Image (cartoon, rainbow, N blue to C red; front, side, top):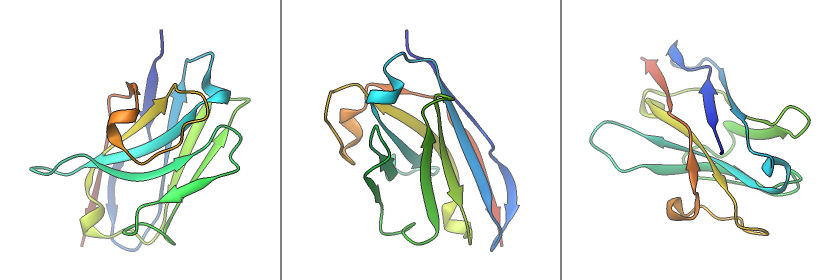
Length: 125
């Protein structure tokens, strides 16, 4: 059974940084693409970033590119999201997700079979 547990959320001021972590129990973690999504109140869940199994490929939403960095440590079964220059519009619940399909990498929310419970990030102006 796959479990994903996010941590690192909280209340931060605009312009500052925060790092989110997602610890995975999946035995297939090191061969799976991992992603971060976020959902603001009243909005659909939106893609933030993904990283492929070896870390060789990353992809970002335009709204976070240049400010956020996704990384992973396969020895620790953990994926990270470093968020810099945070803006009030980054306020959302952030979810990590795992795509079990071999060789798959996508920003499509429906492709990710497993999700964490989410961690709230609130950016004050």
